[in-house]
Image 1 (cartoon, rainbow, N blue to C red):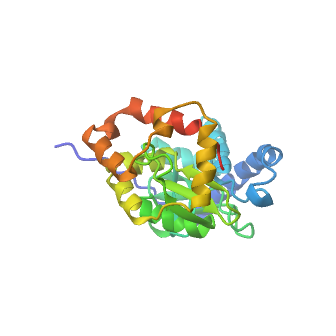
Image 2: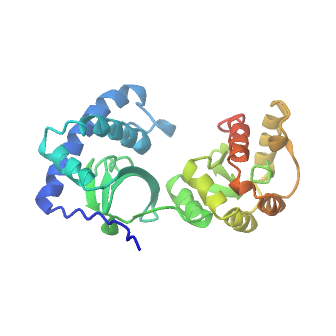
Length: 271
């Protein structure tokens, strides 16, 4: 029987410091490009607040380029890990169940190149063994909602506004100023829905309350301005759509998932 090849990267504290120094340099290069594009986040928050994804993605691109010809101690360490069969991947998930974070994973290591995007006083780079980092994948909507309420300062309701979308996108978020939006259409959260054959969606839809009437009225008005789309304008019970889609095995149909995403993209970003 063929055993799974496990890549172990045994970095010392000195090695970690070298990697941090390299990532800090790449982060500086990324900042130079990103600050003019994203000077502010929502509610006037200045860069880098809220820009963990953009920063992570930019540093990842720079790493991919420079690892082809590693010329510095940090790049050499990273290249050696990859040459042993390690993989450098982008990841999104929960950080200590306090906020969402985009980071890089290298086998058993957590490489956070946007560690200051919630608290700008924290170090920009954090490199830790994954087991010590507090980072984990989002495994269900209950976990997601708990973090969203605290991190985004929103109320969360079930999506009975577009019930045909709800098996894939079961949540409506509402800020304190009454602005609302639907989600979450990221690959990670769509996977939570589909990998569970919509059982996770069904659970959260059964737990959450319906949005306030004023929010529903705002959405109905917005929907009335959109050309008819069966996925957007269908009526019914979102939980029953979960059961129907499970029976029809919609969670296994990539084309149907893409149809849902296209319908979602026709919606306003917020109402």
